[in-house]
Length: 197
Length: 278
Image (cartoon, rainbow over all chains, first blue to last red):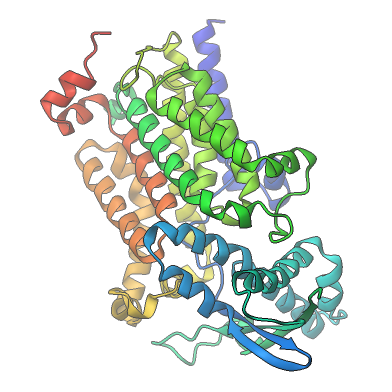
């Protein structure tokens, strides 16, 4: 076979496979190919219909010494000059960006409990699921990072409360056609961290 | 229509090399001040556990500096396709190291850079001009990038048509409201209005669905590309995802052929930078 024709045939075959996998393959097959070929894009999509925040309450000898909201801290980082926005983006993604995953697991455990009669294993997952435990470690890491940034604050422990707040559509405030609204506005995860003296 | 598939595309790969190199270099420089946080396993639990990545994290400054030098060589056009291959490898490693920061732009670029390794991108705008010895492979590489862009649009349109939020016309509101500063945005009144937000929602689906045929058809090509650039510039301004938006807009250049690029560039620029006398 002519080498040019062979090359063109291989090229066509490759793209038939790529388009085939993208449009017709199931999730399992796609995940096998994901690293080696493009398997689909879901861009400009709302990744969540809920807002999240975390409140850090720092204590010294059982007395509150400081309370901060993670969103306020992140927003203040974006107020800095534009060349420092990437730094703000890094902090945003490391400390706040994964809260939607934590909430997704919380919602799923609750959904399974309510509609599938399964035991709610969210608390167990926060310890055993590597993805969740990393997110929670980063939540705790922020407290240490904040103290490093503000050496004037002396604290021996911190209590972290993660809250959720479903978006309300301004033009259809009665729209509640989503499980996130059933879960509602609440603190859905609380943890604490002790600092080494 | 035939013209789209048969036209020469030798100019833009070189332009893309310089511009994408610049985007990656600016991104690398902007990440550097955050490296103490980003590459510190005691503060960032999201770093991968692998031994090799551990070595890179330990020597992150050396890694970032080497990547920066490779990007400069890539932009200057030295080292031919081997430099392109190195850029692809470094981009892959950077994706591993900065997993928490990844956008769709990085994922799109991963595959585009892979195809770009084989493209004839050192013909122009290089310290030493090297036209490709394997023209058929170089052509297929550019076609691969074009088919990749088409896949992105068609798959996106398909996803939106089948997604509940997009079907109900509320996805645009949710997308915008995730970003800080939405309430102060110029778009806030329109996005919060049912008629306008739904109109925009369905218009975006329509735009993505018709992008491929409109780009293939010569008469609508420039219009379709300009409209897409406008949408991405709006998102750049509203969402602040500059890297993602610029990566996507730079891909559009592959949809234009040499004739169209020569019309866009002023004559002195064509003579100086894109002359075929190598």
